[in-house]
Image 1 (cartoon, rainbow, N blue to C red):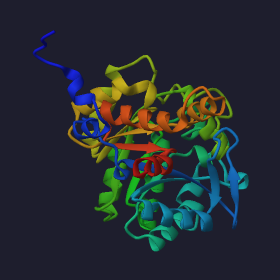
Image 2 (image 1 turned 180 degrees about the horizontal axis):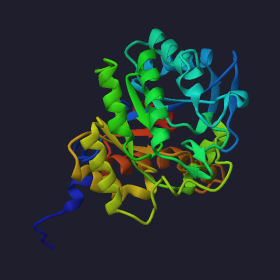
Image 3 (image 1 turned 60 degrees about the horizontal axis):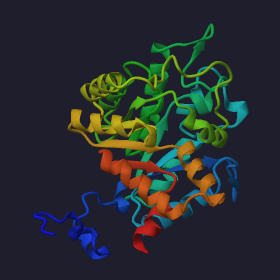
Image 4 (image 1 turned 45 degrees about the vertical axis):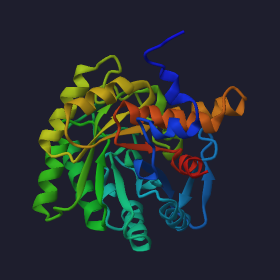
Length: 325
Protein backbone atom coordinates (compact mmCIF):
# COMPACT_ATOMS: atom_id res chain seq x y z
CA UNK A 1 0.00 0.00 0.00
CA UNK A 2 1.40 3.42 -0.98
CA UNK A 3 0.66 6.46 1.22
CA UNK A 4 1.88 9.97 0.43
CA UNK A 5 1.79 10.83 4.13
CA UNK A 6 2.26 8.51 7.11
CA UNK A 7 1.50 10.58 10.22
CA UNK A 8 2.58 7.78 12.54
CA UNK A 9 6.22 8.30 11.54
CA UNK A 10 6.40 11.18 14.01
CA UNK A 11 4.86 9.09 16.80
CA UNK A 12 7.00 5.96 16.68
CA UNK A 13 9.34 6.63 19.61
CA UNK A 14 9.44 8.68 22.78
CA UNK A 15 12.38 10.66 21.40
CA UNK A 16 10.55 11.62 18.21
CA UNK A 17 7.34 12.45 20.09
CA UNK A 18 9.33 14.73 22.38
CA UNK A 19 11.14 16.34 19.47
CA UNK A 20 7.93 17.40 17.71
CA UNK A 21 5.77 18.09 20.78
CA UNK A 22 3.78 21.28 20.30
CA UNK A 23 3.22 21.99 24.00
CA UNK A 24 6.03 21.80 26.57
CA UNK A 25 5.54 22.06 30.33
CA UNK A 26 8.36 23.55 32.40
CA UNK A 27 8.67 24.43 36.11
CA UNK A 28 8.55 28.11 35.13
CA UNK A 29 4.95 27.65 33.99
CA UNK A 30 3.67 27.01 37.50
CA UNK A 31 2.35 29.20 40.30
CA UNK A 32 1.98 27.28 43.56
CA UNK A 33 -0.85 28.41 45.88
CA UNK A 34 0.16 28.37 49.55
CA UNK A 35 -2.21 28.40 52.53
CA UNK A 36 -0.73 30.09 55.61
CA UNK A 37 -1.92 29.92 59.22
CA UNK A 38 -0.92 31.57 62.47
CA UNK A 39 1.27 29.77 64.98
CA UNK A 40 4.57 27.93 64.85
CA UNK A 41 5.32 24.46 63.51
CA UNK A 42 1.65 24.10 62.49
CA UNK A 43 0.94 21.73 59.58
CA UNK A 44 -2.74 20.96 59.02
CA UNK A 45 -3.85 18.67 56.21
CA UNK A 46 -6.92 19.97 54.37
CA UNK A 47 -9.44 17.15 54.61
CA UNK A 48 -10.88 17.65 51.13
CA UNK A 49 -7.46 18.16 49.51
CA UNK A 50 -5.56 14.95 50.18
CA UNK A 51 -1.84 15.62 50.59
CA UNK A 52 -2.19 19.42 50.75
CA UNK A 53 -1.60 21.47 53.88
CA UNK A 54 -2.20 24.77 55.58
CA UNK A 55 1.10 25.67 57.23
CA UNK A 56 2.39 28.19 59.72
CA UNK A 57 4.80 30.79 58.40
CA UNK A 58 7.97 29.08 59.60
CA UNK A 59 7.10 25.91 57.67
CA UNK A 60 5.98 27.99 54.69
CA UNK A 61 9.36 29.72 54.48
CA UNK A 62 11.14 26.36 54.46
CA UNK A 63 8.84 25.16 51.72
CA UNK A 64 9.44 28.25 49.59
CA UNK A 65 13.18 27.61 49.76
CA UNK A 66 12.56 24.06 48.53
CA UNK A 67 10.30 25.32 45.75
CA UNK A 68 12.97 27.70 44.49
CA UNK A 69 15.54 24.90 44.44
CA UNK A 70 13.10 22.85 42.33
CA UNK A 71 12.74 25.61 39.76
CA UNK A 72 9.30 26.89 40.82
CA UNK A 73 9.55 30.66 40.65
CA UNK A 74 6.16 31.92 41.80
CA UNK A 75 3.86 31.42 44.79
CA UNK A 76 0.35 32.72 45.38
CA UNK A 77 -0.40 33.44 49.04
CA UNK A 78 -3.65 32.87 50.90
CA UNK A 79 -4.02 33.30 54.65
CA UNK A 80 -6.43 31.94 57.22
CA UNK A 81 -7.60 34.78 59.41
CA UNK A 82 -8.56 34.21 63.02
CA UNK A 83 -12.31 34.39 63.64
CA UNK A 84 -11.91 37.23 66.14
CA UNK A 85 -10.28 39.37 63.43
CA UNK A 86 -13.14 38.97 60.98
CA UNK A 87 -15.74 41.70 60.52
CA UNK A 88 -17.76 43.30 57.72
CA UNK A 89 -15.15 45.92 56.81
CA UNK A 90 -12.19 43.66 56.08
CA UNK A 91 -9.86 46.05 57.92
CA UNK A 92 -7.53 43.22 58.99
CA UNK A 93 -6.73 42.81 55.28
CA UNK A 94 -4.61 45.98 55.30
CA UNK A 95 -3.14 45.62 58.78
CA UNK A 96 0.61 46.24 58.24
CA UNK A 97 1.31 43.62 60.90
CA UNK A 98 -1.27 41.13 59.59
CA UNK A 99 -0.45 37.55 58.68
CA UNK A 100 -0.39 38.29 54.96
CA UNK A 101 1.95 41.23 55.34
CA UNK A 102 4.27 39.26 57.64
CA UNK A 103 4.23 36.35 55.22
CA UNK A 104 5.20 38.52 52.26
CA UNK A 105 8.13 40.02 54.16
CA UNK A 106 9.36 36.67 55.48
CA UNK A 107 9.25 34.98 52.08
CA UNK A 108 10.93 37.86 50.26
CA UNK A 109 13.61 37.99 52.97
CA UNK A 110 14.25 34.24 52.69
CA UNK A 111 14.09 33.96 48.88
CA UNK A 112 14.30 37.47 47.40
CA UNK A 113 13.98 36.29 43.79
CA UNK A 114 10.77 34.31 44.40
CA UNK A 115 7.81 36.01 42.72
CA UNK A 116 5.31 36.58 45.50
CA UNK A 117 1.71 36.98 44.38
CA UNK A 118 -1.01 37.77 46.90
CA UNK A 119 -4.73 37.11 46.95
CA UNK A 120 -6.78 40.28 47.11
CA UNK A 121 -10.34 39.61 48.28
CA UNK A 122 -12.22 40.09 51.54
CA UNK A 123 -13.64 36.59 52.05
CA UNK A 124 -10.89 35.38 54.45
CA UNK A 125 -11.54 38.46 56.60
CA UNK A 126 -15.33 38.63 56.33
CA UNK A 127 -17.76 37.41 58.97
CA UNK A 128 -20.03 36.59 56.03
CA UNK A 129 -17.46 34.72 53.93
CA UNK A 130 -18.13 36.93 50.94
CA UNK A 131 -15.59 38.70 48.75
CA UNK A 132 -17.01 42.10 49.59
CA UNK A 133 -18.73 44.27 52.16
CA UNK A 134 -22.34 43.30 52.87
CA UNK A 135 -25.17 45.77 53.31
CA UNK A 136 -28.78 44.63 53.73
CA UNK A 137 -27.95 41.26 52.24
CA UNK A 138 -26.18 42.74 49.20
CA UNK A 139 -22.46 42.58 48.41
CA UNK A 140 -21.82 46.22 47.62
CA UNK A 141 -19.38 47.11 44.87
CA UNK A 142 -17.84 50.54 45.34
CA UNK A 143 -17.16 50.34 49.07
CA UNK A 144 -15.61 46.93 48.50
CA UNK A 145 -13.33 48.38 45.82
CA UNK A 146 -12.13 50.99 48.31
CA UNK A 147 -11.22 48.18 50.72
CA UNK A 148 -9.46 46.19 47.98
CA UNK A 149 -7.39 49.24 47.11
CA UNK A 150 -6.19 49.56 50.71
CA UNK A 151 -5.44 45.84 50.77
CA UNK A 152 -3.43 45.98 47.54
CA UNK A 153 -1.35 48.97 48.60
CA UNK A 154 -0.64 47.25 51.92
CA UNK A 155 0.58 44.13 50.10
CA UNK A 156 2.77 46.23 47.82
CA UNK A 157 4.24 48.04 50.84
CA UNK A 158 5.10 44.67 52.38
CA UNK A 159 6.99 43.69 49.22
CA UNK A 160 4.53 41.75 47.05
CA UNK A 161 5.61 41.48 43.44
CA UNK A 162 2.08 40.96 42.11
CA UNK A 163 -1.34 41.56 43.66
CA UNK A 164 -4.09 39.25 42.43
CA UNK A 165 -7.64 40.59 42.87
CA UNK A 166 -9.95 37.54 42.90
CA UNK A 167 -13.17 39.27 43.92
CA UNK A 168 -14.80 40.19 40.56
CA UNK A 169 -15.97 43.63 41.68
CA UNK A 170 -16.48 46.11 38.86
CA UNK A 171 -13.72 48.69 38.37
CA UNK A 172 -11.29 47.31 40.93
CA UNK A 173 -8.37 46.86 38.52
CA UNK A 174 -8.38 50.51 37.46
CA UNK A 175 -8.74 51.69 41.06
CA UNK A 176 -5.90 49.45 42.25
CA UNK A 177 -3.62 50.52 39.40
CA UNK A 178 -4.28 54.19 40.16
CA UNK A 179 -3.58 53.68 43.86
CA UNK A 180 -0.35 51.78 43.21
CA UNK A 181 0.83 54.56 40.91
CA UNK A 182 -0.08 57.29 43.40
CA UNK A 183 1.69 55.39 46.18
CA UNK A 184 4.80 55.02 43.99
CA UNK A 185 4.52 51.23 43.78
CA UNK A 186 5.17 51.41 40.06
CA UNK A 187 6.88 48.00 39.95
CA UNK A 188 4.00 46.07 41.50
CA UNK A 189 2.07 43.98 38.99
CA UNK A 190 -1.62 43.11 38.86
CA UNK A 191 -2.82 39.63 37.97
CA UNK A 192 -6.55 40.07 37.48
CA UNK A 193 -8.95 37.20 37.97
CA UNK A 194 -10.72 38.48 34.88
CA UNK A 195 -12.97 35.53 34.02
CA UNK A 196 -13.75 33.97 37.38
CA UNK A 197 -16.83 31.81 37.25
CA UNK A 198 -19.30 31.00 40.03
CA UNK A 199 -18.19 27.39 40.11
CA UNK A 200 -18.89 24.34 42.25
CA UNK A 201 -15.22 23.40 41.96
CA UNK A 202 -14.09 25.77 44.74
CA UNK A 203 -15.40 23.72 47.66
CA UNK A 204 -12.11 22.31 49.02
CA UNK A 205 -10.48 25.76 48.87
CA UNK A 206 -13.19 27.12 51.15
CA UNK A 207 -12.45 24.29 53.58
CA UNK A 208 -8.81 25.33 53.56
CA UNK A 209 -9.52 28.90 54.65
CA UNK A 210 -12.90 28.49 56.36
CA UNK A 211 -14.23 31.06 53.89
CA UNK A 212 -17.48 29.55 52.58
CA UNK A 213 -20.22 32.18 52.20
CA UNK A 214 -22.38 32.41 55.30
CA UNK A 215 -25.47 33.11 53.24
CA UNK A 216 -26.50 32.77 49.62
CA UNK A 217 -23.81 32.29 46.97
CA UNK A 218 -21.41 34.38 44.89
CA UNK A 219 -23.42 34.51 41.69
CA UNK A 220 -24.09 38.26 41.87
CA UNK A 221 -20.39 39.00 41.34
CA UNK A 222 -18.74 35.86 39.92
CA UNK A 223 -19.63 34.92 36.34
CA UNK A 224 -22.37 32.63 35.06
CA UNK A 225 -20.70 29.44 33.79
CA UNK A 226 -23.05 29.47 30.79
CA UNK A 227 -21.40 32.62 29.41
CA UNK A 228 -18.52 32.90 26.95
CA UNK A 229 -18.67 36.38 25.40
CA UNK A 230 -18.91 37.92 28.86
CA UNK A 231 -15.49 36.46 29.70
CA UNK A 232 -13.91 38.28 26.78
CA UNK A 233 -15.62 41.53 27.74
CA UNK A 234 -14.47 41.28 31.36
CA UNK A 235 -10.91 40.45 30.33
CA UNK A 236 -10.60 43.27 27.82
CA UNK A 237 -11.87 45.74 30.43
CA UNK A 238 -9.26 44.54 32.92
CA UNK A 239 -6.48 44.92 30.38
CA UNK A 240 -7.69 48.44 29.57
CA UNK A 241 -7.72 49.27 33.29
CA UNK A 242 -4.11 48.17 33.72
CA UNK A 243 -3.92 44.43 34.37
CA UNK A 244 -0.50 42.96 33.61
CA UNK A 245 -1.72 39.34 33.62
CA UNK A 246 -5.27 38.05 33.22
CA UNK A 247 -6.70 34.84 34.61
CA UNK A 248 -9.40 32.31 33.78
CA UNK A 249 -10.74 30.33 36.75
CA UNK A 250 -11.41 27.37 36.92
CA UNK A 251 -9.28 25.78 34.22
CA UNK A 252 -10.25 22.24 33.21
CA UNK A 253 -13.94 22.93 32.56
CA UNK A 254 -13.09 26.23 30.86
CA UNK A 255 -10.43 25.34 28.29
CA UNK A 256 -12.51 26.99 25.59
CA UNK A 257 -12.50 30.24 27.55
CA UNK A 258 -8.73 30.08 28.06
CA UNK A 259 -8.26 29.76 24.29
CA UNK A 260 -10.63 32.63 23.47
CA UNK A 261 -9.04 34.89 26.06
CA UNK A 262 -5.58 34.03 24.73
CA UNK A 263 -6.70 34.95 21.22
CA UNK A 264 -8.20 38.24 22.42
CA UNK A 265 -5.35 39.77 24.46
CA UNK A 266 -1.64 40.47 24.19
CA UNK A 267 -0.85 40.18 27.91
CA UNK A 268 0.08 36.86 29.56
CA UNK A 269 -2.84 34.57 30.35
CA UNK A 270 -2.96 32.50 33.52
CA UNK A 271 -5.38 29.75 34.49
CA UNK A 272 -6.21 28.41 37.93
CA UNK A 273 -6.35 24.62 38.20
CA UNK A 274 -8.63 24.83 41.21
CA UNK A 275 -9.07 22.81 44.39
CA UNK A 276 -12.03 20.78 43.15
CA UNK A 277 -10.10 19.76 40.04
CA UNK A 278 -7.20 18.72 42.26
CA UNK A 279 -9.49 16.79 44.60
CA UNK A 280 -11.19 14.92 41.74
CA UNK A 281 -7.90 13.60 40.41
CA UNK A 282 -6.75 12.66 43.91
CA UNK A 283 -10.02 10.85 44.68
CA UNK A 284 -10.12 8.94 41.40
CA UNK A 285 -6.49 7.90 41.82
CA UNK A 286 -7.15 6.74 45.37
CA UNK A 287 -9.95 4.52 44.05
CA UNK A 288 -7.62 3.10 41.40
CA UNK A 289 -9.67 4.55 38.56
CA UNK A 290 -6.79 6.40 36.92
CA UNK A 291 -3.03 6.85 37.15
CA UNK A 292 -2.48 10.00 39.21
CA UNK A 293 0.90 10.92 37.69
CA UNK A 294 -0.36 10.58 34.14
CA UNK A 295 -3.52 12.54 34.99
CA UNK A 296 -1.46 15.39 36.48
CA UNK A 297 0.68 15.86 33.39
CA UNK A 298 -2.17 15.38 30.91
CA UNK A 299 -4.36 17.87 32.76
CA UNK A 300 -1.67 20.53 33.02
CA UNK A 301 -0.61 20.04 29.40
CA UNK A 302 -4.21 20.50 28.27
CA UNK A 303 -4.41 23.81 30.15
CA UNK A 304 -1.21 25.08 28.57
CA UNK A 305 -2.26 23.76 25.16
CA UNK A 306 -5.48 25.74 25.47
CA UNK A 307 -3.43 28.93 25.75
CA UNK A 308 -2.40 29.46 29.36
CA UNK A 309 1.06 30.98 29.76
CA UNK A 310 0.96 30.43 33.53
CA UNK A 311 -0.86 27.80 35.57
CA UNK A 312 -1.73 28.14 39.24
CA UNK A 313 -1.94 24.55 40.43
CA UNK A 314 -1.73 22.54 43.63
CA UNK A 315 0.09 19.91 41.60
CA UNK A 316 3.09 22.17 40.87
CA UNK A 317 5.58 20.26 43.03
CA UNK A 318 4.34 16.88 41.79
CA UNK A 319 4.49 18.05 38.20
CA UNK A 320 8.07 19.30 38.50
CA UNK A 321 9.17 16.00 40.00
CA UNK A 322 7.49 14.11 37.16
CA UNK A 323 9.01 16.38 34.52
CA UNK A 324 12.47 15.86 36.00
CA UNK A 325 12.10 12.09 36.38
